[in-house]
Amino acid sequence: MKSENHILDPDVILIGSGIMSATLGAMLKELKPALRFQLYEMTEEFGKEASNAWHNAGTGHAGLCELSYTPNYGSDGKVDVSKAFEIFHQFEQSKQFWSYAARTGMIEKVEEFINPVPHLSFVYGQEQVDFLKSRFTQMQKHHFFEDMVYTEDREQIREWAPLLLEGRDHSPLAVTKMERGTDINYGTLSAKLIEWLGHQEGCGYATSHRITNLTKDGARWKVEVKDLTTKQTFTTKAKFVFIGAGGGSLPLLQKSGVTESKGFGGFPIGGQWLICDKPEIVNKHLAKVYGLSPGAAPTMAVPHLDTRIIDGKKSILFGPYAAWTTKFLHVEGKLTDLPRSIRIDNIASLIKVGLYNIPLVRYLIQQGTQSMKTRMKELKAFFPNAREEDWRLIDAGIRVQAIKKEDGDAGIVHFGTEVLTNEDLSLSTLLGASPGASVSTNIILEVIKRCFAGSLETPEGHARMKAMVPSYDEDLTQPEMATRQRVLSEEAFKTLNCIR
Image 1 (cartoon, rainbow, N blue to C red):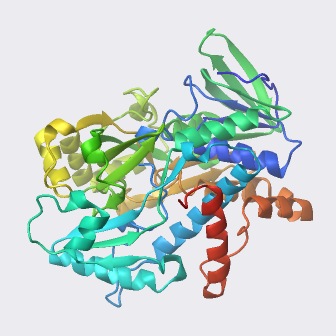
Image 2 (cartoon, rainbow, N blue to C red):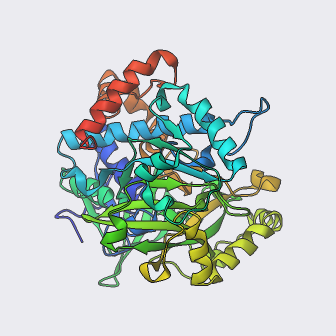
Image 3 (cartoon, one colour):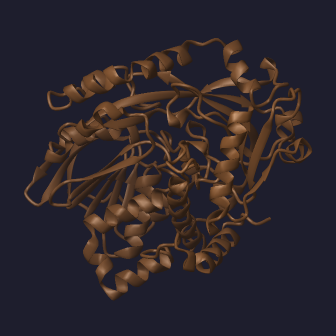
Protein backbone atom coordinates (compact mmCIF):
# COMPACT_ATOMS: atom_id res chain seq x y z
CA MET A 1 0.00 0.00 0.00
CA LYS A 2 1.50 3.30 -1.10
CA SER A 3 0.13 6.81 -0.95
CA GLU A 4 0.11 9.05 -4.00
CA ASN A 5 3.21 10.74 -2.64
CA HIS A 6 6.48 9.12 -1.61
CA ILE A 7 8.41 11.85 0.16
CA LEU A 8 12.19 11.62 -0.10
CA ASP A 9 14.30 13.52 2.44
CA PRO A 10 11.32 14.62 4.57
CA ASP A 11 11.48 16.43 7.90
CA VAL A 12 10.20 13.39 9.80
CA ILE A 13 10.44 9.66 9.13
CA LEU A 14 8.06 7.40 11.03
CA ILE A 15 9.07 3.74 11.27
CA GLY A 16 6.17 1.36 11.84
CA SER A 17 2.44 1.79 11.30
CA GLY A 18 1.08 1.04 14.77
CA ILE A 19 -0.82 3.38 17.03
CA MET A 20 2.30 5.24 18.22
CA SER A 21 3.58 6.30 14.78
CA ALA A 22 0.02 7.03 13.67
CA THR A 23 -0.63 9.26 16.68
CA LEU A 24 2.68 11.11 16.44
CA GLY A 25 2.23 11.74 12.72
CA ALA A 26 -1.31 13.04 13.09
CA MET A 27 -0.61 15.22 16.14
CA LEU A 28 2.61 16.70 14.75
CA LYS A 29 1.03 17.51 11.39
CA GLU A 30 -1.78 19.37 13.13
CA LEU A 31 0.69 21.11 15.43
CA LYS A 32 3.15 22.04 12.66
CA PRO A 33 1.36 21.84 9.29
CA ALA A 34 4.48 22.72 7.30
CA LEU A 35 6.33 19.55 8.37
CA ARG A 36 6.88 16.88 5.71
CA PHE A 37 6.42 13.22 6.69
CA GLN A 38 7.19 9.79 5.33
CA LEU A 39 6.05 6.59 7.06
CA TYR A 40 7.52 3.15 6.34
CA GLU A 41 5.91 -0.18 7.27
CA MET A 42 7.45 -3.56 6.44
CA THR A 43 4.19 -5.56 6.33
CA GLU A 44 1.62 -5.22 3.55
CA GLU A 45 -0.97 -3.47 5.74
CA PHE A 46 -1.07 -0.97 8.59
CA GLY A 47 -1.08 -1.95 12.25
CA LYS A 48 -0.52 -5.70 11.76
CA GLU A 49 1.82 -6.27 14.70
CA ALA A 50 1.08 -5.19 18.30
CA SER A 51 -1.77 -2.86 17.24
CA ASN A 52 -3.59 -5.62 15.34
CA ALA A 53 -7.04 -6.24 16.80
CA TRP A 54 -6.33 -9.88 17.66
CA HIS A 55 -2.84 -9.25 19.02
CA ASN A 56 -4.17 -7.36 22.06
CA ALA A 57 -7.33 -7.37 24.14
CA GLY A 58 -8.64 -4.11 22.73
CA THR A 59 -9.31 -2.81 26.22
CA GLY A 60 -9.50 0.93 26.59
CA HIS A 61 -7.20 0.71 29.62
CA ALA A 62 -8.43 3.35 32.06
CA GLY A 63 -7.82 1.61 35.37
CA LEU A 64 -11.51 0.74 35.56
CA CYS A 65 -11.17 -3.02 35.90
CA GLU A 66 -7.48 -4.00 35.65
CA LEU A 67 -6.54 -5.31 39.08
CA SER A 68 -2.85 -5.33 38.17
CA TYR A 69 -2.85 -1.54 38.47
CA THR A 70 -3.79 -1.87 42.15
CA PRO A 71 -1.78 -4.91 43.26
CA ASN A 72 -0.70 -4.19 46.81
CA TYR A 73 -1.95 -3.09 50.20
CA GLY A 74 -0.27 0.09 51.41
CA SER A 75 1.26 0.63 54.84
CA ASP A 76 -2.19 1.69 56.11
CA GLY A 77 -3.67 -1.69 55.16
CA LYS A 78 -5.64 -0.22 52.25
CA VAL A 79 -5.22 -1.07 48.57
CA ASP A 80 -2.98 1.43 46.78
CA VAL A 81 -5.02 2.81 43.87
CA SER A 82 -2.72 5.64 42.76
CA LYS A 83 -1.64 3.86 39.56
CA ALA A 84 -5.27 3.51 38.49
CA PHE A 85 -5.69 7.29 38.79
CA GLU A 86 -2.65 7.82 36.58
CA ILE A 87 -3.85 5.44 33.87
CA PHE A 88 -7.38 6.90 33.92
CA HIS A 89 -5.97 10.40 33.47
CA GLN A 90 -3.83 9.30 30.53
CA PHE A 91 -6.70 7.49 28.82
CA GLU A 92 -8.80 10.65 29.12
CA GLN A 93 -6.22 12.36 26.90
CA SER A 94 -6.53 9.58 24.32
CA LYS A 95 -10.32 9.96 24.25
CA GLN A 96 -9.98 13.71 23.82
CA PHE A 97 -7.61 13.37 20.87
CA TRP A 98 -9.72 10.70 19.18
CA SER A 99 -12.76 12.91 19.69
CA TYR A 100 -10.92 15.83 18.04
CA ALA A 101 -9.92 13.55 15.16
CA ALA A 102 -13.56 12.51 14.69
CA ARG A 103 -14.90 16.07 14.83
CA THR A 104 -12.37 17.41 12.33
CA GLY A 105 -12.68 14.60 9.80
CA MET A 106 -9.32 12.98 10.45
CA ILE A 107 -11.20 9.76 11.13
CA GLU A 108 -14.68 8.66 10.08
CA LYS A 109 -17.01 5.85 11.14
CA VAL A 110 -15.80 5.78 14.74
CA GLU A 111 -17.81 2.61 15.42
CA GLU A 112 -15.23 0.76 13.30
CA PHE A 113 -12.60 1.29 16.00
CA ILE A 114 -14.37 2.04 19.31
CA ASN A 115 -17.50 0.59 20.95
CA PRO A 116 -19.01 0.86 24.44
CA VAL A 117 -18.41 -2.25 26.56
CA PRO A 118 -18.74 -2.20 30.40
CA HIS A 119 -15.60 -2.98 32.42
CA LEU A 120 -15.91 -5.43 35.33
CA SER A 121 -13.46 -6.66 37.97
CA PHE A 122 -14.28 -10.20 39.14
CA VAL A 123 -12.91 -12.13 42.13
CA TYR A 124 -13.78 -15.32 43.97
CA GLY A 125 -12.79 -16.64 47.41
CA GLN A 126 -12.98 -14.59 50.58
CA GLU A 127 -9.43 -13.23 50.42
CA GLN A 128 -9.97 -11.87 46.91
CA VAL A 129 -13.37 -10.49 47.86
CA ASP A 130 -11.82 -8.56 50.75
CA PHE A 131 -9.18 -7.18 48.38
CA LEU A 132 -11.75 -6.01 45.80
CA LYS A 133 -13.91 -4.38 48.46
CA SER A 134 -10.93 -2.41 49.78
CA ARG A 135 -10.01 -1.41 46.23
CA PHE A 136 -13.55 -0.24 45.52
CA THR A 137 -13.72 1.76 48.76
CA GLN A 138 -10.55 3.66 47.87
CA MET A 139 -11.39 4.21 44.21
CA GLN A 140 -14.97 5.41 44.55
CA LYS A 141 -13.85 8.30 46.75
CA HIS A 142 -12.26 9.92 43.69
CA HIS A 143 -14.29 11.67 41.01
CA PHE A 144 -12.69 9.49 38.32
CA PHE A 145 -14.42 6.43 39.73
CA GLU A 146 -17.51 7.81 41.47
CA ASP A 147 -19.75 5.82 39.08
CA MET A 148 -18.16 2.52 40.07
CA VAL A 149 -20.54 0.04 41.72
CA TYR A 150 -19.74 -3.00 43.84
CA THR A 151 -21.77 -6.10 44.57
CA GLU A 152 -21.55 -9.55 46.08
CA ASP A 153 -25.15 -10.28 45.12
CA ARG A 154 -25.27 -13.19 42.69
CA GLU A 155 -28.44 -12.06 40.95
CA GLN A 156 -26.89 -8.67 40.24
CA ILE A 157 -23.75 -10.36 38.91
CA ARG A 158 -25.94 -12.65 36.78
CA GLU A 159 -27.59 -9.59 35.25
CA TRP A 160 -24.24 -7.97 34.42
CA ALA A 161 -22.37 -11.07 33.21
CA PRO A 162 -24.45 -14.26 33.21
CA LEU A 163 -21.62 -16.52 32.01
CA LEU A 164 -19.80 -15.96 35.31
CA LEU A 165 -22.65 -17.66 37.22
CA GLU A 166 -23.45 -20.57 34.90
CA GLY A 167 -22.37 -23.72 36.78
CA ARG A 168 -20.76 -21.71 39.60
CA ASP A 169 -20.34 -23.20 43.10
CA HIS A 170 -21.22 -21.28 46.28
CA SER A 171 -17.79 -19.73 46.98
CA PRO A 172 -17.81 -16.00 47.83
CA LEU A 173 -17.87 -13.73 44.77
CA ALA A 174 -17.61 -10.02 44.16
CA VAL A 175 -17.71 -7.74 41.11
CA THR A 176 -17.18 -4.05 40.47
CA LYS A 177 -18.60 -2.44 37.36
CA MET A 178 -17.89 0.71 35.39
CA GLU A 179 -20.52 1.20 32.70
CA ARG A 180 -18.45 3.47 30.50
CA GLY A 181 -15.74 1.10 29.40
CA THR A 182 -14.64 0.66 25.79
CA ASP A 183 -13.52 -1.99 23.31
CA ILE A 184 -11.02 -0.61 20.79
CA ASN A 185 -9.58 -1.84 17.51
CA TYR A 186 -6.19 -0.12 17.59
CA GLY A 187 -5.20 -1.49 14.19
CA THR A 188 -8.17 0.15 12.49
CA LEU A 189 -7.60 3.39 14.39
CA SER A 190 -3.94 3.40 13.31
CA ALA A 191 -4.89 2.85 9.67
CA LYS A 192 -7.44 5.69 9.75
CA LEU A 193 -4.92 8.18 11.13
CA ILE A 194 -2.17 7.12 8.72
CA GLU A 195 -4.43 7.29 5.68
CA TRP A 196 -5.45 10.82 6.72
CA LEU A 197 -1.79 11.77 7.15
CA GLY A 198 -0.85 10.37 3.75
CA HIS A 199 -3.37 12.67 2.06
CA GLN A 200 -1.93 15.81 3.64
CA GLU A 201 0.41 18.08 1.73
CA GLY A 202 4.02 16.93 1.93
CA CYS A 203 3.20 13.53 3.43
CA GLY A 204 3.47 9.95 2.24
CA TYR A 205 3.48 6.35 3.42
CA ALA A 206 4.65 3.02 2.05
CA THR A 207 4.04 -0.54 3.16
CA SER A 208 6.32 -3.51 2.29
CA HIS A 209 9.33 -1.30 3.02
CA ARG A 210 11.89 -2.36 5.61
CA ILE A 211 14.40 -0.04 7.32
CA THR A 212 17.78 -1.79 7.11
CA ASN A 213 20.04 0.80 8.73
CA LEU A 214 20.15 4.17 10.50
CA THR A 215 23.25 6.35 10.66
CA LYS A 216 23.75 9.96 11.70
CA ASP A 217 24.98 12.17 8.86
CA GLY A 218 25.66 15.63 10.26
CA ALA A 219 22.40 17.21 11.35
CA ARG A 220 20.27 14.57 9.61
CA TRP A 221 19.68 10.83 9.80
CA LYS A 222 20.55 8.72 6.79
CA VAL A 223 17.98 5.95 6.56
CA GLU A 224 18.48 2.90 4.35
CA VAL A 225 15.21 1.46 3.04
CA LYS A 226 14.52 -1.79 1.21
CA ASP A 227 11.45 -2.12 -1.00
CA LEU A 228 10.38 -5.68 -0.25
CA THR A 229 8.38 -5.88 -3.48
CA THR A 230 11.11 -4.85 -5.92
CA LYS A 231 14.03 -5.88 -3.64
CA GLN A 232 15.65 -2.52 -4.39
CA THR A 233 17.38 -0.49 -1.68
CA PHE A 234 17.55 3.29 -1.48
CA THR A 235 18.62 5.97 0.98
CA THR A 236 16.64 8.89 2.32
CA LYS A 237 17.38 11.49 5.00
CA ALA A 238 15.38 13.20 7.73
CA LYS A 239 15.87 15.71 10.52
CA PHE A 240 13.89 13.56 12.96
CA VAL A 241 13.29 9.81 13.12
CA PHE A 242 10.66 8.11 15.25
CA ILE A 243 11.02 4.36 15.79
CA GLY A 244 7.53 3.11 16.56
CA ALA A 245 8.12 -0.45 15.40
CA GLY A 246 6.92 -2.31 18.51
CA GLY A 247 9.08 -5.36 19.09
CA GLY A 248 11.23 -4.31 16.13
CA SER A 249 12.26 -1.06 17.81
CA LEU A 250 15.18 -2.43 19.83
CA PRO A 251 17.17 -3.80 16.84
CA LEU A 252 16.70 -0.51 14.98
CA LEU A 253 17.70 1.47 18.04
CA GLN A 254 20.86 -0.63 18.32
CA LYS A 255 21.65 -0.01 14.64
CA SER A 256 21.37 3.75 15.20
CA GLY A 257 24.37 3.60 17.51
CA VAL A 258 23.08 6.36 19.79
CA THR A 259 24.70 6.42 23.21
CA GLU A 260 21.33 6.20 24.92
CA SER A 261 20.77 2.70 23.50
CA LYS A 262 23.72 1.22 25.37
CA GLY A 263 22.77 -1.28 28.04
CA PHE A 264 19.24 -1.85 26.78
CA GLY A 265 18.02 -5.36 26.12
CA GLY A 266 14.68 -6.93 25.34
CA PHE A 267 12.78 -9.86 26.82
CA PRO A 268 9.98 -11.12 24.52
CA ILE A 269 6.77 -12.60 25.91
CA GLY A 270 4.39 -14.30 23.50
CA GLY A 271 0.71 -14.86 24.04
CA GLN A 272 -2.35 -16.84 22.98
CA TRP A 273 -6.11 -16.40 23.26
CA LEU A 274 -9.10 -18.68 23.41
CA ILE A 275 -11.84 -17.35 21.12
CA CYS A 276 -15.56 -18.14 20.99
CA ASP A 277 -17.71 -17.07 18.02
CA LYS A 278 -20.89 -19.03 18.76
CA PRO A 279 -23.84 -16.57 18.84
CA GLU A 280 -25.72 -18.48 21.56
CA ILE A 281 -22.77 -17.87 23.92
CA VAL A 282 -21.47 -14.55 22.60
CA ASN A 283 -24.88 -12.88 22.87
CA LYS A 284 -25.02 -13.61 26.61
CA HIS A 285 -21.90 -11.58 27.35
CA LEU A 286 -21.28 -7.84 26.99
CA ALA A 287 -18.36 -6.94 29.24
CA LYS A 288 -14.63 -6.97 29.75
CA VAL A 289 -14.14 -8.99 32.93
CA TYR A 290 -10.69 -8.86 34.57
CA GLY A 291 -9.46 -11.06 37.40
CA LEU A 292 -6.29 -11.37 39.46
CA SER A 293 -3.00 -12.52 37.96
CA PRO A 294 -2.08 -16.06 39.07
CA GLY A 295 1.29 -16.89 40.66
CA ALA A 296 4.33 -16.18 38.47
CA ALA A 297 2.25 -14.70 35.64
CA PRO A 298 3.53 -11.35 34.35
CA THR A 299 1.16 -8.47 34.88
CA MET A 300 0.42 -8.33 31.17
CA ALA A 301 -0.92 -11.93 31.44
CA VAL A 302 -3.72 -11.22 33.93
CA PRO A 303 -6.76 -13.32 32.89
CA HIS A 304 -9.86 -11.69 31.44
CA LEU A 305 -13.04 -12.67 29.62
CA ASP A 306 -13.75 -10.00 27.03
CA THR A 307 -16.31 -8.96 24.50
CA ARG A 308 -14.54 -8.04 21.25
CA ILE A 309 -16.15 -6.20 18.34
CA ILE A 310 -13.89 -6.50 15.29
CA ASP A 311 -14.96 -5.60 11.76
CA GLY A 312 -18.53 -5.44 13.00
CA LYS A 313 -18.50 -8.99 14.39
CA LYS A 314 -18.86 -9.77 18.08
CA SER A 315 -16.76 -12.50 19.76
CA ILE A 316 -15.58 -13.48 23.23
CA LEU A 317 -11.90 -13.68 24.05
CA PHE A 318 -10.26 -15.31 27.06
CA GLY A 319 -6.64 -15.17 28.12
CA PRO A 320 -3.97 -14.32 27.57
CA TYR A 321 -1.93 -17.47 27.94
CA ALA A 322 1.69 -16.40 28.00
CA ALA A 323 4.36 -18.28 26.05
CA TRP A 324 8.13 -18.41 25.76
CA THR A 325 9.51 -17.07 22.48
CA THR A 326 12.72 -15.60 21.11
CA LYS A 327 10.91 -13.66 18.37
CA PHE A 328 10.42 -9.90 18.73
CA LEU A 329 7.58 -9.63 16.18
CA HIS A 330 4.52 -11.77 15.44
CA VAL A 331 4.33 -11.37 11.65
CA GLU A 332 7.91 -10.56 10.65
CA GLY A 333 9.81 -11.93 13.65
CA LYS A 334 12.56 -14.56 13.57
CA LEU A 335 13.68 -17.03 16.23
CA THR A 336 17.09 -15.36 16.09
CA ASP A 337 15.72 -11.96 17.20
CA LEU A 338 16.63 -12.38 20.88
CA PRO A 339 20.12 -13.88 20.34
CA ARG A 340 20.96 -11.22 17.74
CA SER A 341 19.96 -8.44 20.15
CA ILE A 342 22.65 -9.45 22.67
CA ARG A 343 25.52 -6.97 22.87
CA ILE A 344 28.52 -6.55 25.13
CA ASP A 345 26.81 -3.57 26.75
CA ASN A 346 23.57 -5.43 27.61
CA ILE A 347 24.62 -9.03 28.21
CA ALA A 348 25.21 -8.50 31.93
CA SER A 349 21.71 -7.00 32.35
CA LEU A 350 20.13 -9.84 30.40
CA ILE A 351 21.92 -12.52 32.44
CA LYS A 352 21.13 -10.85 35.75
CA VAL A 353 17.48 -10.36 34.93
CA GLY A 354 17.27 -13.92 33.65
CA LEU A 355 18.67 -15.29 36.89
CA TYR A 356 16.19 -13.31 38.97
CA ASN A 357 13.27 -14.40 36.78
CA ILE A 358 13.75 -18.16 36.50
CA PRO A 359 10.18 -18.73 37.82
CA LEU A 360 8.88 -16.47 35.04
CA VAL A 361 10.81 -18.33 32.34
CA ARG A 362 9.56 -21.64 33.73
CA TYR A 363 6.01 -20.25 33.75
CA LEU A 364 6.27 -19.06 30.12
CA ILE A 365 7.52 -22.44 28.91
CA GLN A 366 4.79 -24.24 30.86
CA GLN A 367 2.11 -21.93 29.47
CA GLY A 368 3.24 -22.38 25.88
CA THR A 369 3.23 -26.19 26.10
CA GLN A 370 0.07 -26.79 28.16
CA SER A 371 -2.80 -28.83 26.81
CA MET A 372 -6.19 -27.52 25.73
CA LYS A 373 -7.65 -29.26 28.79
CA THR A 374 -5.40 -27.21 31.07
CA ARG A 375 -6.29 -23.99 29.27
CA MET A 376 -9.97 -24.79 29.64
CA LYS A 377 -9.48 -25.24 33.38
CA GLU A 378 -8.33 -21.61 33.62
CA LEU A 379 -11.26 -20.46 31.49
CA LYS A 380 -13.70 -22.31 33.74
CA ALA A 381 -12.60 -20.16 36.70
CA PHE A 382 -14.48 -17.39 34.84
CA PHE A 383 -17.05 -19.42 32.89
CA PRO A 384 -17.66 -22.73 34.70
CA ASN A 385 -19.93 -24.15 31.98
CA ALA A 386 -17.43 -23.53 29.16
CA ARG A 387 -17.05 -26.43 26.71
CA GLU A 388 -13.84 -27.13 24.80
CA GLU A 389 -15.64 -27.59 21.47
CA ASP A 390 -16.92 -23.99 21.60
CA TRP A 391 -13.46 -22.41 21.76
CA ARG A 392 -10.43 -22.18 19.47
CA LEU A 393 -6.85 -21.16 20.22
CA ILE A 394 -5.17 -18.32 18.33
CA ASP A 395 -1.84 -16.56 18.69
CA ALA A 396 -1.80 -13.13 20.28
CA GLY A 397 0.90 -10.51 19.87
CA ILE A 398 4.43 -10.47 21.22
CA ARG A 399 5.48 -7.92 23.82
CA VAL A 400 9.16 -7.10 24.19
CA GLN A 401 9.78 -5.86 27.72
CA ALA A 402 12.65 -3.37 27.86
CA ILE A 403 15.51 -4.34 30.16
CA LYS A 404 18.03 -1.80 31.41
CA LYS A 405 20.83 -1.93 33.95
CA GLU A 406 18.83 -0.45 36.80
CA ASP A 407 16.17 -3.20 36.54
CA GLY A 408 18.57 -5.37 38.56
CA ASP A 409 16.99 -7.38 41.35
CA ALA A 410 13.57 -5.86 40.68
CA GLY A 411 13.26 -7.92 37.52
CA ILE A 412 11.29 -7.07 34.42
CA VAL A 413 7.72 -8.02 35.15
CA HIS A 414 6.05 -4.63 35.15
CA PHE A 415 3.79 -2.46 33.08
CA GLY A 416 5.12 0.52 31.26
CA THR A 417 6.51 2.00 28.10
CA GLU A 418 10.01 3.44 27.97
CA VAL A 419 10.42 6.61 25.88
CA LEU A 420 14.04 6.94 24.81
CA THR A 421 15.36 10.05 23.07
CA ASN A 422 18.92 10.81 21.99
CA GLU A 423 20.89 13.82 23.22
CA ASP A 424 20.26 16.14 20.27
CA LEU A 425 16.54 15.24 20.21
CA SER A 426 16.69 14.00 16.61
CA LEU A 427 15.64 10.41 17.33
CA SER A 428 13.04 8.96 19.65
CA THR A 429 11.80 5.45 20.19
CA LEU A 430 9.43 3.48 22.40
CA LEU A 431 10.31 0.29 24.20
CA GLY A 432 7.99 -1.69 26.43
CA ALA A 433 4.50 -3.07 26.66
CA SER A 434 0.98 -2.53 28.05
CA PRO A 435 -0.87 -0.20 28.46
CA GLY A 436 0.87 1.61 25.61
CA ALA A 437 -1.91 1.71 23.00
CA SER A 438 -4.56 3.04 25.38
CA VAL A 439 -2.34 5.84 26.64
CA SER A 440 -0.71 6.51 23.26
CA THR A 441 -1.72 10.18 23.29
CA ASN A 442 -0.03 10.78 26.64
CA ILE A 443 3.11 8.96 25.49
CA ILE A 444 3.28 10.91 22.23
CA LEU A 445 2.73 14.16 24.13
CA GLU A 446 5.92 13.33 26.04
CA VAL A 447 7.78 12.79 22.77
CA ILE A 448 6.54 16.13 21.43
CA LYS A 449 7.41 17.93 24.67
CA ARG A 450 10.97 16.62 24.47
CA CYS A 451 11.67 16.87 20.77
CA PHE A 452 9.41 19.70 19.54
CA ALA A 453 9.17 21.81 22.69
CA GLY A 454 9.51 25.06 20.76
CA SER A 455 6.29 24.38 18.89
CA LEU A 456 4.35 24.18 22.14
CA GLU A 457 5.77 27.38 23.59
CA THR A 458 4.25 29.71 21.01
CA PRO A 459 0.67 30.96 21.54
CA GLU A 460 -0.37 29.36 18.23
CA GLY A 461 1.24 26.03 19.08
CA HIS A 462 -0.24 25.95 22.56
CA ALA A 463 -3.69 26.71 21.16
CA ARG A 464 -3.36 23.96 18.56
CA MET A 465 -2.42 21.41 21.19
CA LYS A 466 -5.26 22.50 23.50
CA ALA A 467 -7.67 22.03 20.58
CA MET A 468 -6.45 18.44 20.13
CA VAL A 469 -6.17 17.61 23.84
CA PRO A 470 -8.21 20.11 25.89
CA SER A 471 -6.76 18.91 29.19
CA TYR A 472 -3.19 19.30 27.96
CA ASP A 473 -1.17 20.96 30.77
CA GLU A 474 -4.07 20.40 33.23
CA ASP A 475 -4.14 17.92 36.11
CA LEU A 476 -7.60 16.36 36.08
CA THR A 477 -6.82 14.29 39.17
CA GLN A 478 -7.21 17.30 41.43
CA PRO A 479 -10.55 17.61 43.30
CA GLU A 480 -11.22 21.08 41.91
CA MET A 481 -11.06 19.62 38.37
CA ALA A 482 -13.96 17.18 38.91
CA THR A 483 -16.51 19.20 36.94
CA ARG A 484 -14.03 19.95 34.16
CA GLN A 485 -13.18 16.26 33.84
CA ARG A 486 -16.82 15.20 33.68
CA VAL A 487 -17.60 17.74 30.95
CA LEU A 488 -14.59 16.74 28.83
CA SER A 489 -15.32 13.05 29.26
CA GLU A 490 -18.98 13.50 28.32
CA GLU A 491 -18.08 15.47 25.20
CA ALA A 492 -15.54 12.85 24.12
CA PHE A 493 -17.92 9.94 24.65
CA LYS A 494 -20.68 11.66 22.68
CA THR A 495 -18.38 12.40 19.76
CA LEU A 496 -17.04 8.85 19.78
CA ASN A 497 -20.61 7.52 19.80
CA CYS A 498 -19.95 5.58 23.01
CA ILE A 499 -23.18 6.75 24.65
CA ARG A 500 -25.90 4.62 23.11
